[in-house]
Image (cartoon, rainbow, N blue to C red; front, top):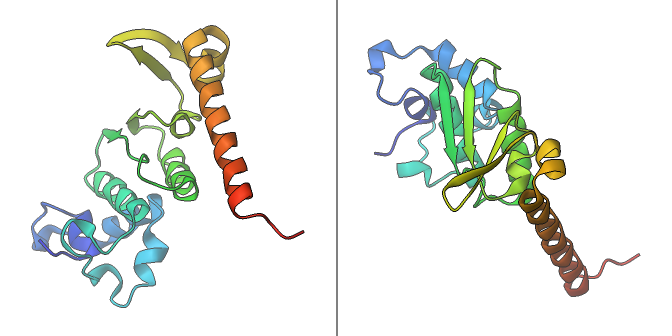
Length: 171
């Protein structure tokens, strides 16, 4: 259905039970409040079915706001940043990092930049746990994690070099 920001954040709650103060608080904690407030109709702005009028990062933040509105104990993000550009991914991850510490966030990700600041990482290979710890701990104790990071770093560096070759900067 084509719903407004407030209807999306309070999804499933009957209109007479919607708490606008809680909606605004959830939007602020998920870092989408200023975007919403700068739209023509604010929290009443209709965002299209499945949020088609929003960017990927805005849809992610809206989903986080919905979980916060419902006072979820656990937030599960499955490849939440895989379709986002690096700048948007960084912004979404910053909003996740600033959430209350009593909210458990489980992130399933292949992009290592997504999990870099997690309290605990569980490395799974072929359906088995092969390592666990912080990012830095896994870098030191897990050869497979270390190799994965180095491989990603090399690929990222090749991508940057290719972009500079295609679009050289005028100095």
